[in-house]
Image (cartoon, rainbow, N blue to C red; front, side, top):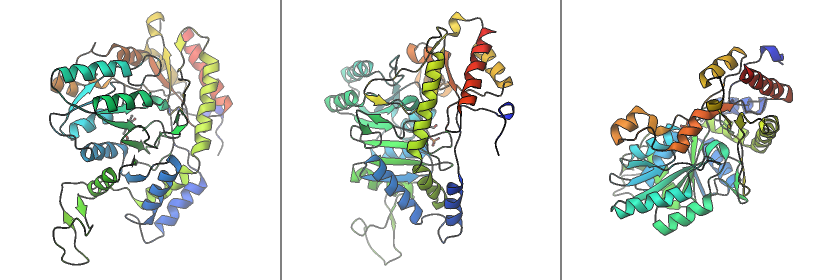
Length: 395
Ligand SMILES: Cc1ncc(COP(=O)(O)O)c(C=O)c1O
């Protein structure tokens, strides 16, 4: 049912589900397999084909994907793993799950992705003090790919592993390569949370060109169990399996994977719509000196999981809190991405991080407002949202 403009509520992002998606889930509900059935492999195959990755493992959420990647890559106590401070907690928490030590490197002030020069300086500092940087979890913030070629060069020079946290960047390209092809990273993770480009309700995937990593995450997804005869220490018969390492139940259901297959067909359309919305906002806001619109490097395509508008509250009489309150009164619910991870009491208490450690991420946090971007928004909605933002800022 079409809602009139004055009845609509706008959030920063949300899923787009159509009848084909509903039918796909219904048909699994009426089948023999609700979980551990054929839809899981089908979804994995579709992901592999679409993004040009040799192997894919689908799991119950993106955080589980990051957790298993860290274990498969062999992170252990004493290893240092670096990520961006301007990300969701999961990008850093996966380092802790493996017992490794987290560190952060500040972001590039234009793309908001990890700053490669600062990363090199930090890796050298660790090495000079005899510490091993085992890996870097680089986050394609908001859907803008990191500088993957430069990261890859550093990874080779300093011998660290590279993980692409691509929770925001499904459908994006770096110099023509699909994010997810793992051309530069050892492995890539996607999230299928409803605010992401493609949803399975909850869900995640690990994409890699390494058979070893893939086999490891597949075992860890199901309790660390193997039925592979070549790996068994003995074999009692066709029912026999062995647990040779400690794994988890991180499986995704067939219901979710059927939804994923159906959603994946619409990815290009969803991405184009998000890019068109971003173009609209760019035109509406780029000449307004109270704000800075997202910048896009010339060698990438940005897929706008978020539209991170920076508002220069330091020069305005309105506070960020008041802007949020007033926009909510007008049915526009924005978000902030992100509270820097090193601000979290847990990270401060356990590892001694402090406010002031990563000034660029902290500045972006103070200024950033994620305004609505999702495929159902039409030009009348965008007009309402952009006009309302400007009016509220005028006071
Ligand atoms: C950058 C980033 N990494 C990882 C995750 C974790 O994904 P999930 O919510 O599917 O566990 C998210 C989720 O929002 C995210 O934004």
